[in-house]
Length: 205
Image 1 (cartoon, rainbow, N blue to C red):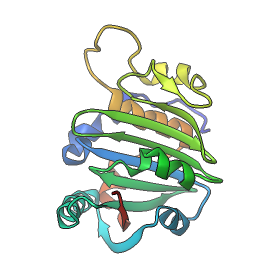
Image 2: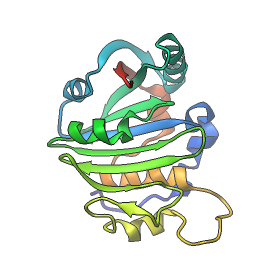
Image 3: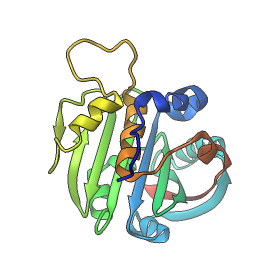
Image 4: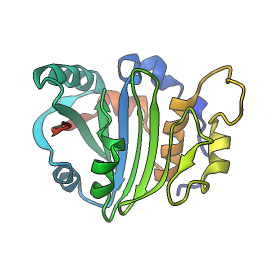
């Protein structure tokens, strides 16, 4: 865990403003342990050409979805320190337990997803065990082997606990902040815009 102040959902509000095409449906996954190529092979990925910048990734992901009739998902990959970052535009592989948990053998796996209907999942797994899983819009309903370990942090970050609807829904940016708290990896606009991502596709049906 990184020291210093924990970022809040508000610190990630830029994501929905600056990257609206990605923000409406995405999955971000951080993996520590296996080498990047090993992560790809654990997911039975097929290498594709690299792409520069997240806008190109989003375009390619939708084009690939049409080309493959929804059978394969494009995944963009880069490394950030000791972590492998996987980004799916309009995907959910990272939070699919039957794929993520086996792939987390000997690894830490932190993934969060939102779809076009604002249904979301945050998944933290360690060596095939689900430690924490919840929908960021409904943080009171958590499961896993350590469901309450991060409750104080989640409240500080800005997940909304309680009956009344929040004035501003920060559940998606809060998921980024929680992933950063667990991994120490900050997702930034520069990371998304300036990275040349290795890409691969994964069968999803």
